Length: 255
Image (cartoon, rainbow, N blue to C red):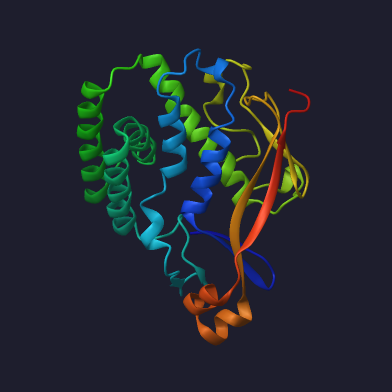
């Protein structure tokens, strides 16, 4: 679950809905970035499905008593997260081994220097998966790296939407994205990272525009009253709250 706190409510976004937005973003790619359409459908599939492992976890929100806020993807208990990361990648592999390879790279990148037993085991098992799939699927290393970075960028741009209040000023953005998106120089558009900025509560400017054209996408979420949580608990509060929809247009001004 992705959580954004307001004065009287929590904005709650299921990980899979965030991933669906990432997939919509991925599908708008300017194909010249890759100089090849090989495996492109599977790259989009990886972006759309990368958080499949969260589907079960997000069915019932859990309250974090220590922080007085619902558990989010950032503070969810690690061992549970790792188990469901693996479950999600396993499910993706049954449909698209290449998409699973990209997702395996993605989740392994969360643990560059694992120092606990669970993380070490996860990274080691995913390394075996990666070697096995790379023997099955032939792809140029440079293209594989660009595909992986595209997945990461689409994940990050979707998170940029989810973690920021619509229309927020640049200086008040979530700190992860103020200076741009990691590793996007690889796309060859600029020597600098791709940077996004809200122009209004429905429009985001993406500098060094990596997409075929401007486009509009939608994100599903819920707004749960803090009073409702106090009275009924976070799980019932979530269940009874209506689904809402946010519309975002991505434009490429000053690219």
